[in-house]
Image 1 (cartoon, rainbow, N blue to C red):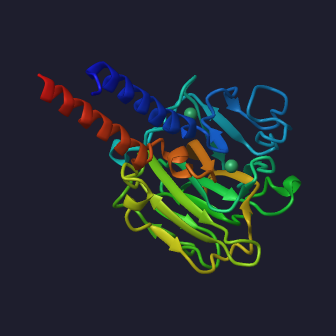
Image 2 (tube, rainbow, N blue to C red):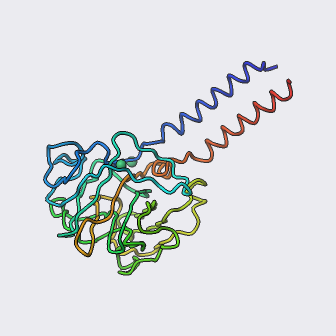
Image 3 (cartoon, rainbow, N blue to C red):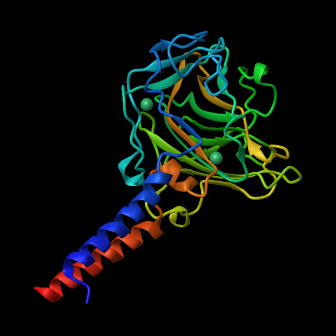
Length: 295
Ligand SMILES: [Ca+2]
Ligand SMILES: [Ca+2]
């Protein structure tokens, strides 16, 4: 018969393995950008100065676009259940609109082939402010122009997705889910379907992520036929887009995660997979029941 101590040890071992599975997946997104270690102020031409923006392949390009690192973090609305936490000096980025430019980062090394999940936090304070990302498909060196190709952004309180199969210029009104001056979580699932077929996309604004991907509910934007992004087998050339159509600083962006791992949903939300949680819960219940029986 298993002693109480042995049972307890078994539970601890199972818990450890479960947590290890969660722990290994946690934070292993291919792209993790909290902007917390960057030098503050305007990052225009900051190549070689500070971290994050430089001429290195795995960093933002540090081109002539005006992007500044601000001294504050964005956080997701509590009701989303989003559980990724930022560490280090609180910072986010904000772009200037004058030339409607972007900051780009190549994704050569990440090899984001196949389905990818992504998430980012944004905040607009005016209806004319825009904050989001894009996936440029052309040359790295041309990439500082906002050509709005493959853009996914919050424009004021509207969700915008570029492409002939996108939302259209006016976007989708998501003012029932977010407001100006409030942080918003944008979550997306990109499905490229190989080089010979068109890309598909689902996007949610402030979804409840606590019940895994299956519990997200209806996407705010969904295009499961032709998105108009061309035939893609992966995401590449990630861009930061933040501008104001009236001509001052655009919206804020923070906590940008992208992953194509099997744990991608967890990687971009911080929410452990239900299987691991169930294992932990069952172990805990069994232990409690056993203790109760013995008491
Ligand atoms: Ca941050
Ligand atoms: Ca990967």
